[in-house]
Structures are given as C-alpha cells and as structure tokens.
Length: 194
Image 1 (spheres, helix red, strand yellow):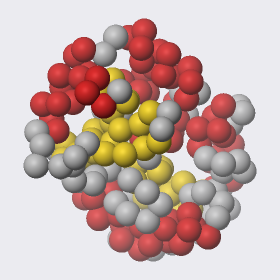
Image 2: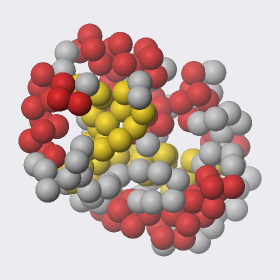
Image 3: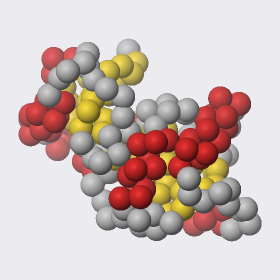
C-alpha cells in the first residue's frame, strides 16, 4: 500500500494557487472548491490528484486525472471524495471529485462516489458521523447512473432522493447557470425513499 496521506500532503504543498486556478477555469468550478476537495498537481504522474477517503475521512487512495483520462496511483484503495466544509443536514452525493466541487459551489455539503454504483457504505458512515438527516444522490440520466443511484441509496439506510440534472452532470449544470434553488425546487415534490 502507498502512504496516500503523505503523497497528497506533499503534492498539495507544492501546488501553486495559479495552477489550481487554471484547473478551476478548465473544469468550470471555483478554486476554493478544488482546495476543499484536496486537489493537487502530481508531478510523477503529470496529472491532477484527488484524495480518496474512507467513511472516517482517512486518505486511502489517490485518483488521478489528465488529458488522457482518469486512473489511480498504484497501490490505492478505492474510496469516496470528501470536502473540508461545515456539515449540513442534507448530504449531496455526487459522482467523482469534480462534481463534488460543483456541489460545493452551489453551497451544498457534498461527498463523491468513485463511480455510479460504489461508495454507498463509506458514504453511510460519513453521513452518520456528520449527523445528516437525509441525502440527495445526483445521478446521470442513463440506466447505469439510475441503477447505481438506487443501489447506493439502498446502502445508505436513511431517507434519500435521486436528482437527475437536465444536462450531462452537475458540473455542466453549474456551468450553464444552474443553482441550488433550482435543485431544491425540483426536490420539493419528492417522495423520500427510506
């Protein structure tokens, strides 16, 4: 196994604010939200790195992202993407670190799954530790996305709703002017699954 905590700490320390700001512009999210999810430049991999955590917030792996795609540092364990922000009663569960950053920009308390169908047990632990009352699972508008959201929802053992943005993902929703208010209005008539 790798010492993911130390690697991330070193890379964060060496990452310039200007480089993070450039990534933020490219992704359509704020620099502050990328800082909150722990983004850093990983020179050995020529990629952006995001820490993957267990439900207690321990860094157990590192997701990498560059123009060639998304991959992980060898020796990583798959985990969830968390943000250093104050907890709220509703936890918004996204897919991946950049959609988590977009949720933060909308003012939500958010966590990211590693993919559409994993991470439910880790998120459940995280939500309980932060005394969240319910969860909103953001799903892609396709069968794998919706099936994965239902699977994760069942693992949460707390009231949850599934929100499907009218575009590809939450980042695009934000980029096109979507707001927290729009999401909350959509959820007003929602029957919460338990």
